[in-house]
Image (spheres, rainbow, N blue to C red):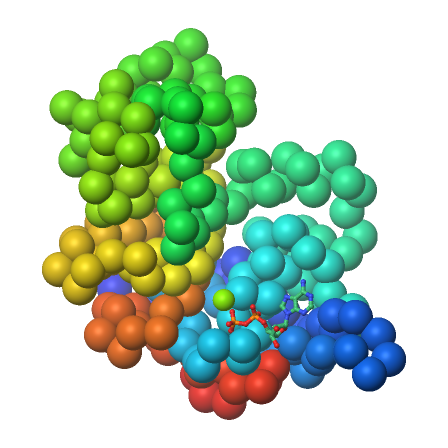
Length: 228
Ligand code: ADP
Ligand code: MG
């Protein structure tokens, strides 16, 4: 795609609400969100703690379902899909990166990536090694998470998110546990793998400098998109 050219919509969120709990304990985490993200876009979602950012990302990744409204991702209406198809969707259409890295502590870097792989073709081992090299960990493949720095652990998590060649990368405060220098490097890596793979990146952050690296910034407040 030429620079500046708008791809097709890859995410279409329409009138989405999400409530947790009931009665006096009811929390309205999302109160009517509309959002369109195009193919290949890098989008940052910003907003205060508790504003609904993670809830929205979970809807996009089919981790949770809206109370009302529709979510279409990569041409699929998530609300009308069967559980079986949703499992496939979560594994192959989206790749998740989390603030806490969420690596399996007993597995090496290589094994953490391998464990997330589905239908890796014959060249699976080469592909996993190649991904770890791409994120700068070619010489750390046999290290367990405790033997890696925070930035290295997040690089493993990025390789893991890419292993099934997702269309969309969803990252929830991926630099939140890193010092600013390391966070900056991880952010550059995330945007680079998104751009070179022509993937869409949706990134939640608290950090204005992190958000500034995205093409578009969406601000969410009290469960509503107020800007972007
Ligand atoms: P953010 O990621 O912007 O910090 P969240 O999406 O995690 O915000 O949360 C939005 C609101 O929903 C908050 O008030 C939070 O306490 C509430 N919430 C989130 N998850 C749950 C849950 N599983 N049960 C009840 N309330 C929840
Ligand atoms: Mg959150």
